Amino acid sequence: MKEHKKKLKLKVSAISEGTVIDHIPSESLFDVISILELDKTTNMITFGTNLDSGKLTNKAIIKVSNQFFENDDINRIALIAPHAKLNIIRDYEVVEKKVVEVPDRVVGIVKCFNPKCITNAEPITTSFSVISKEPITLKCRYCEKITHENQMVIR
Amino acid sequence: MSKKDLISIMDYSKEDYLRIMDMAADFEENPNQTLLEGKVVASLFFEPSTRTRLSFETAINRMGGRIVGFSDSGSSSVSKGETLHDTIRMVSQYADLIVMRHPLEGSARYAAEVSSVPVINAGDGANQHPTQTLLDMYSILKTQKTFDNLNIFMVGDLRYGRTVHSLLMALSQFENPIFNFIAPEELQMPEEYKIYLREKGIRFFEHLEFTNIISEADIVYMTRVQKERFSDPMEYEKVKNVYILRNSMLKNTKPNMRILHPLPRVNEIATDVDQNEKAYYFQQARNGVFAREAIISHALNLK
Image (cartoon, rainbow over all chains, first blue to last red; front, side, top):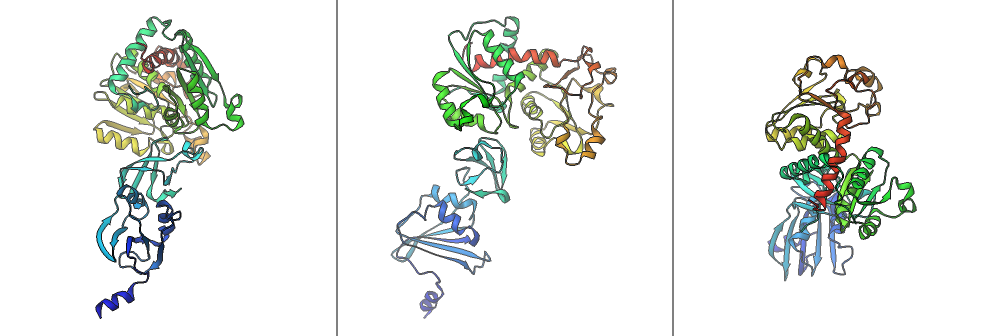
């Protein structure tokens, strides 16, 4: 009976093998899809957004079948979904849980806030050192200017 | 061995600074040392900067090197739409060293990544201009005989002036400096530099004017207060005469005190100061040639 109720609550259908990325802020869903290049995968993906969540007022969830992520890859979403949680699913069971961590360096992903930075003028991969993780503060490797969390634009 | 680029003043250690100073003194004694004979230096000025370019090209000529390049981007392939990446890749096949000035910030770091030969940053937008800082340091060392225990006054536009920021960072590597920042409200030293000084336990003071305190200074580093930096033109009118240095203000200054300015000057140093022995800005510009000869030698391991 209990099991039945739990199934009823599932708004996005369960997967047999793969990764569930939960607790994504709704507004960041499509950026997460883009950063993880899920728009290019041929694996089955289901996602839900504007779901109720205790922690976030509106959360999104992504379920990717038959795909698993390296920590370095998954940490790339930390900038826009710092509280995201990953469940690794094998045979419908959660076999591992992971949280994302803001990395020390951010390569690509974010645009430098300085309009006069060379990275905004030529096709150059941006590169930042993370000088603060909470709130996120990035220092551009090239122009040496600071991009603050509230100024971050995903490329 | 990794390539010895000079992109940001913090790329050099204290030992590097001192080595450059020693070499600059040696070049001052004997400016014509043909260490660059048989070498080609690319002088790439994507925006005009007559003073910096002539100073570099003089240094290269005195060292017997040959120069290729351009003095503004209109006369280069940039006007045909070539990227900086491609220009640098191409030029680094030709030359032994690249000296580059570019209007965009971060362009020098990027050029150094792309280039197979060392890159010297001759100014990347409002970001860095490390050879100016090294010539400022050489001028300070020549006139004060030390970098330790100096009271440095920085006057004028401290918010946007990259020369004062880099000089502050470099001098902070030495013993017990004191900084006095004199600037209008709108153009004060950015918070990040004040945080840096606090973290290093270095004393600094901020003032709106300096007539009554100038007697404490060892170095007075003047910069230009530009009208276009003010959001309110009334503010500029109020302060425009406060940051002008006049000969009458120098009466009770220390005998060792010297006045520096990165030039060009407009009106922030009255012309009556020029005759005062404490005015050092023209010798400072001359020191630029020796400092740049030293920087080139360092980049190419010539000495």
